[in-house]
Image (tube, rainbow, N blue to C red; front, side):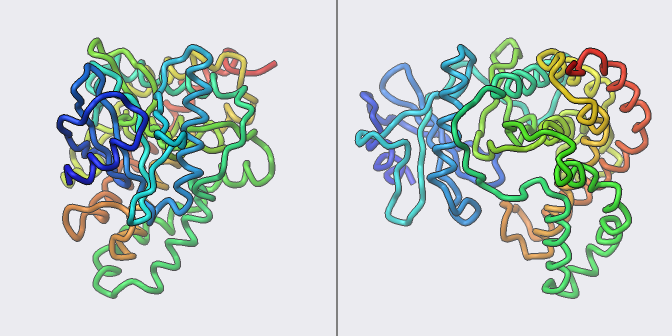
Length: 358
């Protein structure tokens, strides 16, 4: 592995030598490595999963364009390094694509939120990203069409039921029923987008807590993992962040008694998020915001369940039932969110006058 990384690394336009590497393990899809060099600068080298991202070059160009846009505005963001030939990627002999960015020193990520302050800072990072990409004028390629479309994910799910084994179907039956029982209340965002009731914006589309970079004082630096930056609705980023920030357990926790919704984290995250969106949202966007935490949690559970039924072809798994356990965890969290839905509504609507574009 080290020799492969060295051969990729030396093709980028850097003036230092590879010393050693460390593997980052938090991602579901891509392979990411921290490269230590003979200088004071370290780098993040990432191999894009070509089985998932068929248009890896477009993906890399998208995230470089967004990162450069943010840097030009004076915002903190990733800084990507070109190759010695001036490209932003390396294609290896196996048709894998690699990109390189500077490692932001003294930074850290969290798999779970541990304080109200971290929840608030996560909201600051996400809201700041959305506010500062509204004036992006470049072209973004749609990397994963229908990525957050419940209707499309539901069709994938139904197709998986026709091809999965009977054993898998029996193990998952309770949660298959859960999907059918809840699907109607989960498609409101699809309806709003299809009917042009809410605007499309530049969205990150994967705002889980581990994709937010913090400094050693636990202040937010920026969003990372820009692979899924595309046009979408603001609810995708708001709801998906809350999904991981407010869960009291990792998304594969099997002891469901530990899976709850931390309402204090929700309030603090929302406060940081709304700080940068004053006067920027439509009435319909605000009306749908309270639904986004349960919808984004549901869609994640649906994706995990579909992948389990498809014999784990998308997400990395540590054991055969890993995706089923993830799905059960997320659907349990949906139930916990629904129990405090009225409180969520009230908290968001209290901020309506602040957020509403006039």
